[in-house]
Each structure stands twice: as C-alpha cells, then as structure tokens.
Image (cartoon, rainbow, N blue to C red; front, side, top):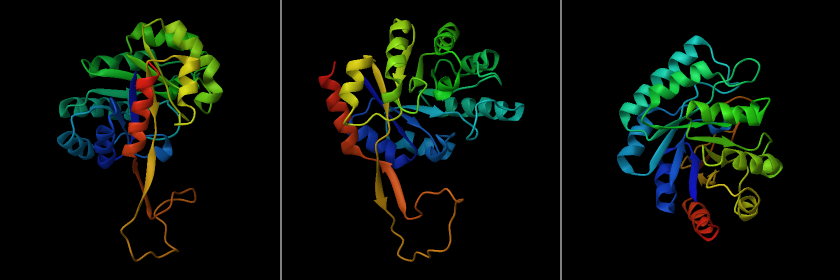
Length: 247
C-alpha cells in the first residue's frame, strides 16, 4: 500500500518524507482545492528531499474547462516541472458537458512522459464515472484521484469499490478526500485500494507579535491570518504504520 500526502509547502514536503510517506502531491492554495505551486518552491523542496513528488498542474481554482491561454499555461508548467525533476504531474480537463477532454488530455500526457500522470478529482465532476474511467485507461493515465463522486470518500464508498473492481489493475484508483486516522481502516476494508491520498495538516503558530486585527490579506472567506498550516510528520507516520497493518 502506498500513502500519498497532499500538501502546499516546502516544510510539509520535508515532514512528509520524515514521516515515511511514499509520495507527495505538491500544490499551492489548497483552500481552492489546489493549484500549481511555484517552480521556486518545488526546486527548494527537491533540493532538500528525495521523496517522489507529483506536481499539481491547475492554473486556477473553479471549474476544469480551460481557455486556450490557460491550457497554454498548463503545457508550459508541465515542461518546466519536468525539466526541474518532478516525478509526475496531476491534472484534469473537462469539456463543457462534463466529459473528459481527451484531445487536450492526450496532449498533456504526451508532453509529461516519461513522468507519471494522475487525473485528479475533476473525475468526480464527470456525469458517468464508469465511462470516464475507461476513457482514462484508454489514454494510458497511471492513476485517478477520486472521492467516489461525493463530497468525501465515506459517502463515495460504494462507487469507489466498483471503480477498483472495474479497473482490474489497468489503472490505479486512489481514494482521497476526507480520509482520517479514524476511518482509514474502514475505508480500506470497504474499498481495497492499493494507494490512498491523505491531507494531514497541523497549525503552526505565527511568529508575528504585532497583529493588527482589522487588516486582512484575503477576501471574506479566509483562513486565520496568523495560523500557518504544515503537514504533521507524526500523522503521516500514523498513516504509514496503519497501512503496513492493512496489507
């Protein structure tokens, strides 16, 4: 069993490696569900770790139907992260009707190789999961990240189980969204996947002493200005140890 950690900082990549994770999905702005991280952050993380790093290729938050300029940005980001030593990329592109944009996806897959390719939870926004899975298999995608087309894996367990059975080893179905230390064993018992995607943050107190309470750097929906979240090394290790007992 492999454990992938979703994260958004260099410190978190280091913590994930120390905790024993198999791989990380390196993102920016997880508040938006994850966008493309900076190349500088990736290079520093690569300099300080050897853990396998999948890089999110998502030019913005919101839907997965991209303009020509956004697609051009995705192409350029894949090229740059490939040159910088990424182990793989994570993306998802949909047509306006919710089906997978095979033309653009194939172009990105070809550009990414020989890196690994994960199709992210854009999959959960497709109208027919079984057909979408066969489309990804036909394109040669390595894995798909999915919550079973529900808000979290707990609600999506029935579909996740069917998708793992349908895949028959042709693609890795990797459950993710809402997996915790409390439900991990149950999720694995029900789904039987070979890889899991988890988010294990912990707040780190800001070093700022002067804290004006009337100024905010974000919009109305915002995270606390003086809480910084990094991956919790001990929580990573807990998942890794649990995974070892659930083989």
